[in-house]
Amino acid sequence: MIDYRALEALVAVIETRGFERAAQRLSVSQSAISQRIRQLEFKLGQPVLLRTTPPKPTELGQRLANHLQQVQQLQQGLLLNEEATGQSVRIRLAVNADSLDTWLVPALAAAPGSDSMDFELLVEDQDVGLRRMKNGEVMACICAADTPVNGGLVQPLGILRYRAFASPGFVARYGAGQPLLMPQPPLAQLPCLIFNQDDRLQHRFLQALCPQQPEPQRYHISPTSEGFVRMALEGLGYGMMPQLQVAKYLEEGTLVDVVPGYHLDVPLYWHYWQTESPVMRGLRAAVVTMARDRLILATASA
Amino acid sequence: MIDYRALEALVAVIETRGFERAAQRLSVSQSAISQRIRQLEFKLGQPVLLRTTPPKPTELGQRLANHLQQVQQLQQGLLLNEEATGQSVRIRLAVNADSLDTWLVPALAAAPGSDSMDFELLVEDQDVGLRRMKNGEVMACICAADTPVNGGLVQPLGILRYRAFASPGFVARYGAGQPLLMPQPPLAQLPCLIFNQDDRLQHRFLQALCPQQPEPQRYHISPTSEGFVRMALEGLGYGMMPQLQVAKYLEEGTLVDVVPGYHLDVPLYWHYWQTESPVMRGLRAAVVTMARDRLILATASA
Image (cartoon, rainbow over all chains, first blue to last red; front, side, top):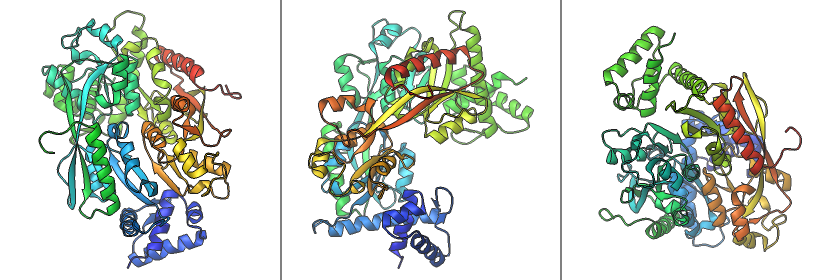
């Protein structure tokens, strides 16, 4: 049997980035922390922690830390009906930035028992998010892939609809007040906005509208959703944004639809483990309910 | 003399993530792209590009790509007075997330000639941002460090003021409507919000207010500024946020100051190169002007 007090010490060192702070958190001496981790390593015959500044888990150490989280989560499920366990449970989720910045947070708050959940959100591109799921680093993942990982299941959440938006000034400058379908200069030469080098939404937009030149010639990169929208508001470029995120600006007229009628749908899925604890089941229900309310119903696979 | 057409091909492959799309962008054949890069490698005696999917620059390749950007920027400076050069210049900046999501974007848009600037923003913690500056990967960097890198200069921008904010519901639940200075349970046991594991603002807050227990016992992690604020609005935790970012919510009363009178000041600096081009000088002036308007004047070093 693994020594779970040693795993607690390990996780405390990783999270607080030091032995001294880990000792503070667990209210034990610093030497007790060191000793527990040393004994764990002795038993396993491998290091679990690199003694760098800050200390870093080895691959085995990270696996053990993830394991402790899952165990704690199962414990939480056991104890949830008995009141006031006083224990909180860490829930690590990989999510896409646009969900985090639009509809997701109220769902987390609405989950039963959210008072005793500590959320750790990782914003990841789809491939990285799925890889973290596969490695057991996260308990659930929101992304556009519909194939479950090994040992996992998938529930469709709905569709996040993107349209190309820009400021009225931008449209006036390049499109003379017309939809930008036939602007001068051609669409691919106008500055667009992209989220990062993995973001292909603008490329898909150009592919659909001017397949002879699908590669944007000029683009700004903003790796935050909020910065992305602000760049559009300031007229620096046009870009694909979730309708949900910019509703207020559309109403105000500070953003306009660049090519009305064109949209791009990104289906979102909740990836979770077959060994789902009651806590995670409650969270999934809250997320699905919120998604039904805020996202567009997927017609086929839902 | 380096073959700049080969560097252009290299950068196009890196940015478009493929030889075919690079060829499209530069309006040449795919074999022309391959040949230029091969000749460059032959001349240098080292690979500049790993033929992976997508292709990735070697360290030398990345240095060459950065060099091309700097040369293009100098060219842009040369040509700026002659009208309609038709060329845009890529400006890569490392910035902190809170600046990007609050005051920075209007400054970028207000820079003279911003129409022909393509911004590539990298959101980085201070140390990483400075390292990118040192490596010549970015043309400027906004961070809290006041010591210039080798060959660089520093201009103070002002102070971003953080206070601890939470929803009224959160305060009522834990502090019975009172400031949270002496809440039950103790401050360090309330769930707080942190941006990522490198974010120490909440720790500094606890260090100041309850030095006997400076380590937060419970925290949520949201790696986007917007998600962070939304978590606070939903009552999931309290956290240190820029006053600038939440002014609207304070007015509405959907967020309140948890410990009125306590604030934490983060001074911001613009790091730039001694070999500053006219374009970058104009951008710096616009950023400094906007910072004066939106940030708090630093009393000492400014």
